[in-house]
Length: 258
View 1 (tube, rainbow, N blue to C red):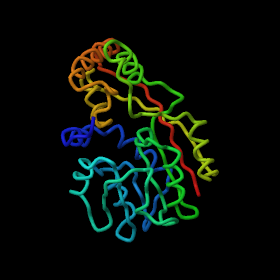
View 2: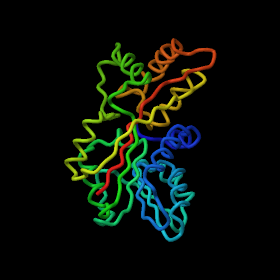
View 3: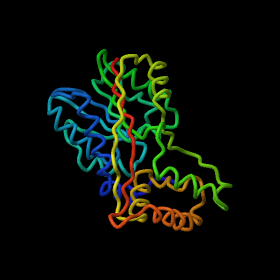
């Protein structure tokens, strides 16, 4: 399922979890005035705009995202030092080699189809001493939303429709392998443990839908998705308390230096 304007606007309203994760990553990147920053998977650009306020008019920030709907929203907040383009992590040919101080990749890398090629592109565009920062779900930890999705989509009639695109959450050993292959040997990796809260299953599914551009249901046809959604809501109800849902998550946060 392709992204839609409705999902893009929904993400703008519901992406507080990703925004907070991005701020955690930013603290580890030490971005300063005058830096040139590339935000890969910028979405509607809210945290990209925050980064632009850090680098100031003497710096520049460019955000790219494969969703034209999200880039359309981002372009509404563009400024002289903040621009946005439709683009993919695997192809950064718009950017010259050794031209970027920091590549910022927040809540995005698990959606990249060719993660090895993307990592090499990050390394290519970085200046010597430049840094790539990546934050996303850890493949060493299975959160409740992954278990519920796998459970429901393993049932009939959904199991006959294979999942055709992500997410692929990397284990620490896997991301280290990609960094090695890209020549980024100097790195620090930490775990950011967070709790995602929602009032009920419907709210959690809405967050997942807007965060994934509609990929919550794997490869199942559109006419089966309402039924799958109801089955997912039943599973979420099993772990909902009077205080709602509190879902533990572990984010793998990587900063590597060229």
